[in-house]
Picture 1: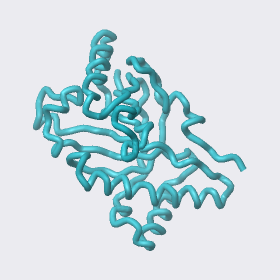
Picture 2 (picture 1 turned 180 degrees about the vertical axis):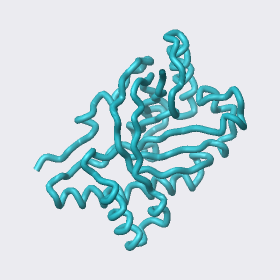
Picture 3 (picture 1 turned 90 degrees about the vertical axis):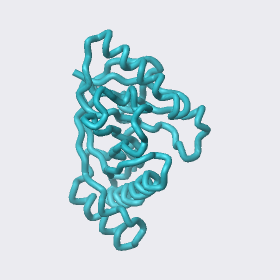
Picture 4 (picture 1 turned 30 degrees about the vertical axis):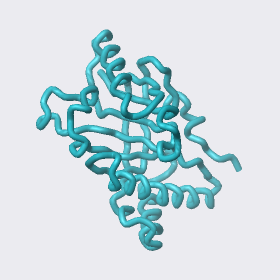
Length: 206
């Protein structure tokens, strides 16, 4: 039985160059959970931990149907209240208190995974009491379309340098924002040396 690996099937989605480039991103489905606050604090980690038991419950449900798949990379959408912080964007997010950052954590799902089965997987995990946050998980669809992205190598604290490069590229090509700042964590930041982290930074544009 072949195991579906989304990173291989959708290679352009999960790869980026170290310089900004314009790409076209296909519609995708996710298991997701939202939160607000400093990503270095415990509630953020708790939400990551809530995603994985349900993702693996789905994996084993579909493995029993001969549709096994690899649990995908962690991703995140990031934003803050731009009315409260006028003139600021994710390119200037260091000027916004981290307590004001909002996020949606994501794990991409194969297209054959249904919302109904996600609810069943949540019930399994809630019944086993493996996650107090499992009930907050949502089935989420996203169609970013035209986007600018680049690969950031290094700690999250230096992402601003890559975001500024993306901003310059957008300005040069007369592109404007058309969605939320998106990050794909190719490295497990809980275990990887910060200077070796690889993160795709993506900005939907029009």
